[in-house]
Length: 91
Image (cartoon, rainbow, N blue to C red; front, side, top):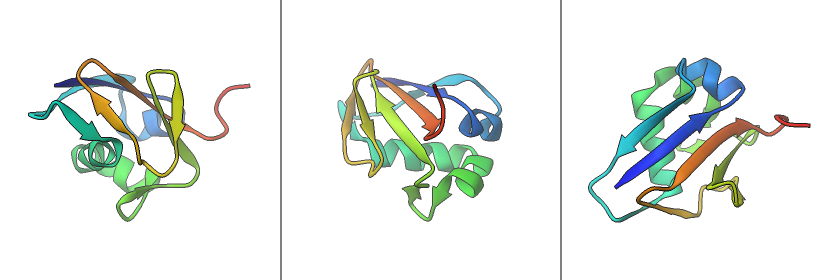
């Protein structure tokens, strides 16, 4: 499955790119597992945006523009998009 990851604010600064496509061998994957994959790929994201194996409380994840996750408890499927952003982003 392919998942598009978009970074905004501090997460974008830490990974150094606006977006990327991640490919997994599963039909569905937990958001927490996707975030952990991102942390392994981007050490600066791990250092500044994670608390152990959880996303820092100052950041949030949005799935397909519909639902926000702070506890990383949702699931993504092929073709989904995850936005990772600072809690204070936006207006």
